[in-house]
Length: 418
Image (tube, rainbow, N blue to C red; front, side, top):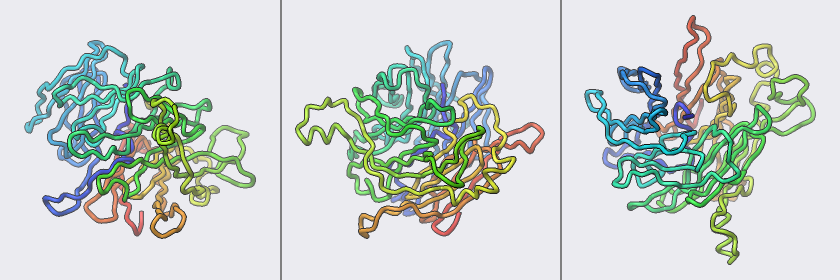
């Protein structure tokens, strides 16, 4: 099954970053990377020493629970047995089988979600031809629960990325995320389509962006901080035709000059609006794209002449089972919106300014740029112990070594600099 190395963006959740027991900010870490083969499974943890743990156990796919969860768990999928196995990783790093879950349908994509996604427990997202299922193996009823159906809109489409966000505002027993975002390949090879789904087992997908190069969910820092329900915002990077010199995104010849636009839009629950207005619209209606709140062109920050049109403007790529889409990762945390152009090794950081309390328009303020000189396989963003600071971890393809290996770098983003 397909999956992202670091698990995908989590910017659409309210993730508590303060420890009220220890009276200090929490330090977050990216989820460990699980790598498996026919005979071995490896867990690579960025922060622990030793970083790698090897188990003499093969699998078709594997995922790790988040660092900081109550215990450490490893989930393995065995395609021949059509079975999911959940292991608890003991203090001595041995594995103990916790649960075995048969799979009656093909597993297309999976990911570990934050506990806030469903009942504050371990949640593993399973996407099959039937739809999306929350599997909570540590609950009394661990059977996977469908939270949306595939529908004709997504039938036959390959899932490139998946994330959830928002909150129903319930804190005692039944907290749930409310919106899902999926990316699928577009008709043009270099683009992706974005789909949003209201999390309800009868809901289906609504297209919220076509011809994009990246998309993610985003929570403004005040939303949901008091425990109230909230809907996330939608961040997209798309291409607009333009006249005159611009960012030539496509590597194909004879393409017109195009401008990359970073945009933040609201998301609206169309069914709730219909019900409030007394409409008879079916309750299965999903989330639709609302007003554009802020937008900015990325052209001026991309150093077009030197970086984009140079002979080595596109970096050498490794072979990736999941492919190279989306080419742009969007990582969101604490009002920071970070745009990562994977094929160019360029990182652009912005801060979202909400103008609600100042009567100003919402805006995206540029914070900094990094050119890292390597193809970006995946990335994750986490809050740090320092107020107003986040830490980004990137898995890069290092072609400078003899064996073309990967490497992980850490970049700190604060209110002052990148």
